[in-house]
Image 1 (cartoon, one colour):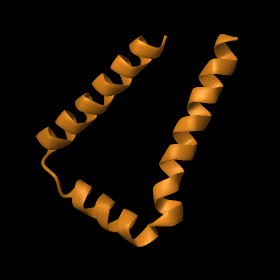
Image 2 (cartoon, helix red, strand yellow; image 1 turned 90 degrees about the vertical axis):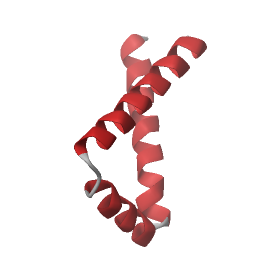
Image 3 (cartoon, one colour; image 1 turned 180 degrees about the vertical axis):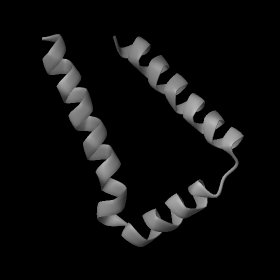
Length: 62
C-alpha cells in the first residue's frame, strides 16, 4: 500500500508539473528564464517555502 501511495503522489506531481508547459509554453519559458536569473538566496527561500508547504499539507491530510 505504501509503494502504491508513493507512486500515486509521484504521478500527481508529474501531472501538475506538466500542465504549465502543456497549456502555456511561451509563458512557461519566460517564467523559467526569469526564475533562472534570480539570486541563489531567493531560490533557496522559494524551495524552502515549497518544501514547508508540502510537509504541512502532508501532515494535515495524513
